[in-house]
Image 1 (cartoon, rainbow, N blue to C red):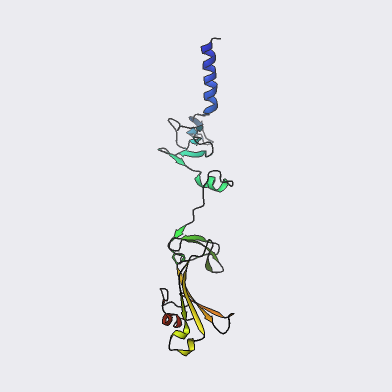
Image 2 (cartoon, rainbow, N blue to C red):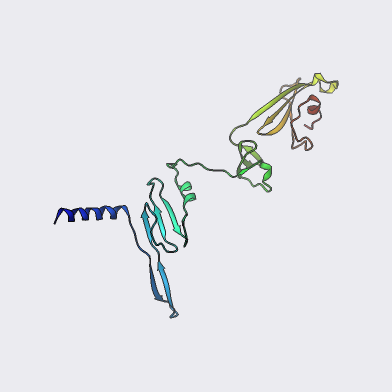
Length: 213
């Protein structure tokens, strides 16, 4: 055999190993009622380029990236990627360096009928929340800012003299903690949950003492 012939055989073997094709064909069959029908035998292709002249329902394993082989189905017009979510679920070693994207709302109050076990990301509070025990609980970190401290002695109402008030914002929501000077183990909390009319953070002693704890 000539050198040229051997080279042609080697090239053919190399191409056969790189691209595996099974061509679709239309087959005419007779069903059990005697009706002549046309059945399409779909093809399954593994290659780096899209198959030519595909038929509806053909499958293409796009192995352009061997670490991220994508399954595509021909819908009659375009090749549709069908296994993105499956890859995310099955790639437990995360070789593709992907991440779970949580559903996003501005705040947890956007969920009209929350259910135990729900997880969302609040774009306002820059935090993720888990629904548990009938409340939304932050599951990443507590963002605390704008801390204000007031002493009850600073107003004319003597009933406030035994208290200190700390007003702050946690994960975008205001909270006021009232500490008892006479007993370090006693503290009361006020939030917008039990102070519906107070929509913004209390920033004065008068606003803090007027809250419901």
